[in-house]
Image (cartoon, rainbow, N blue to C red; front, side, top):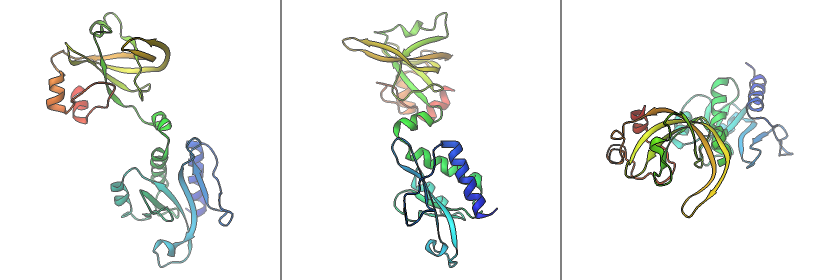
Length: 250
């Protein structure tokens, strides 16, 4: 595979996966290309053509590289020990790496690293949109709603939407005192349903639609069990789930 064809395939992948066109911000280096997010304007890929000697090679021929950002230093340190992947050239601080576009690293691996860089540099709003399904514990107060009987005779209800929750997520409904336990596993089928309610101690700005998937015995995932076995010491609002609890709930 030629250098040109691999670079072209990388460009084609980025445009097909994320849209937009590359930018060429430097007059002195018209072939350098930057891909950035449309909302926060952050770069997620920088393609350059430089001398291999600048990367530490004894060879002084030119090579195309792509600079990408990773999500943690451990992954970076692991990858830079692989052939064709180096510490970020020109962007040396943080989690940036440089990947040779000379055929040393397969296209499939490069596109996977591009995906990581896109996610890492995305805005909070975009990260929520592009992330995969997530599991949540969602509290419910029997004082305001009879959640113990909410699914009597039906499998779908509407519930106050928690921040960050999106369609496809899983919510485990935790019923407050005197029950104090997780009773239901539900799939989120729809979000952003318009609704406005403002009371003395409760306000609702939008609803989500949830479908019942599983019931739990009231004495199985009690607050005492959540606290002592899974490290969940409070359920005051929608929150993530420890891996060990996620496995137990399945």
